[in-house]
Length: 192
Image 1 (tube, one colour):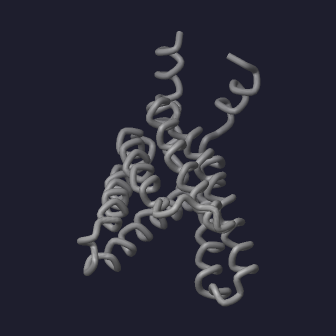
Image 2 (cartoon, rainbow, N blue to C red; image 1 turned 135 degrees about the vertical axis):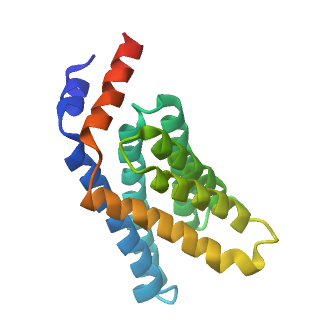
């Protein structure tokens, strides 16, 4: 195993989990600031803040990939790829070169579903957070359907609450370190 990987795995996962939560919170604050305080009437500032929020989300995606790789490396990678594709669609939209008619939610829905599954299977985070994230992912996919009309506000609230709950849990509690170490050790045994 490369030396850098050994050092990363030897470091305590709780501070990394809290850092992930902080970066997640920075994403929320910048995304909400763009909509609430800046608005689309000031397009240059709005786009700049949206780009910053997307950078935070890319960072969160990569941090989650590392966090959940011991749970299931393939699903963690697949989740990361879905999220990065959604971020790419958002960034292309800022520059008005997005693929016509492609919503980033097509990618963020499966991302939340996979992330929820990984959380649920992880044992180092509360399973309720995994259930909430899976419901959020399902909600984002329903949100895209033409029949979502009256549910759209509820689906947005569900997605926001699920992601914010995960964010706040990570900041306040981090991960269950012994359970996280069990996953790392199980992966090492499986790789060996």
